[in-house]
View 1 (cartoon, rainbow, N blue to C red):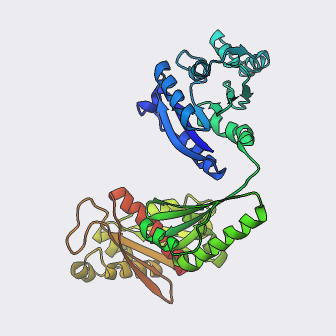
View 2 (view 1 turned 45 degrees about the vertical axis):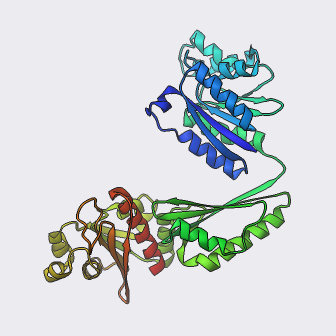
View 3 (view 1 turned 90 degrees about the horizontal axis):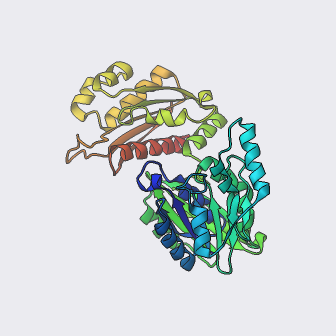
Length: 406
């Protein structure tokens, strides 16, 4: 099934709000084995919306619109869809009463224009809205299934999950799994995957890169659940055998959550000293509930003076090797291990840019040292992108290296 998502609203077109609905719906459709081939956004203009709908009807089996179901004059999605399909609008008195009851419970006056939300195209079905006054609408034609959803995500998401999903399911079983990797680029990863005997009909395997990580998404479809489950896990095991050194988790669980769980399991305390990331790693880790059980402290030693005073880095090391060096990363970690008495520590120092790089030490160069009382590991990497991207990539790599070290 081919789907098109149409987001309606001038506020989206002019950039006043971020279009998160398309992202959410695309993810959900993919999980259901429906291909969202087209995303279209259009402002609150009747003629342009008509044009968009006419194009969608020719190229998509499923059309989902978001927005334009409210009571105001510029809320016109339902009316325009009805005109394009040649359907009359009819009043549903039951829904009209439900809307009136919602206003009564909120102790608000229901204005006349709110009644337009109780109208629907002939032979269509209303979709209940538990969190607002604008119900969704389901229309089945000979060639298309059309679903109209409200714009606010707080209304759209629960409506889709509670009421719409059942209208889109079929007899096929669909299983979606993700394998999350770090430390390998998307093109290199795809080449490795292509060398494996894992591609076949009804199994879609795709890669998605973001901030130094790459997701391998596998979508399995079939009428026999036992068969597709068996084949799916065979493919996952082949990928694990080949690329296990790069895999940090599954099904998009954040590496910080995985790390915290591992540290809890091993009953280890962690401390960090950050330079180029400026506390970013600590910030990510402390967003995880329960991190306080294993996370001791973070010291942001951004200047050379801080590295000397807080961690005991030798001034001679800084003078001869520089702040961004293997030697400095080692002495930062060693100083923190002695100071904190934690079980495991990580230091990080680098050049986040956009300035400060040289031929010998380019922007993006980062050194890390992960250490416990018995051993240590130095990691050197050069991350690409702007300052924010470099910091994000370095932070994720740091958490991966702690996980691997543990």
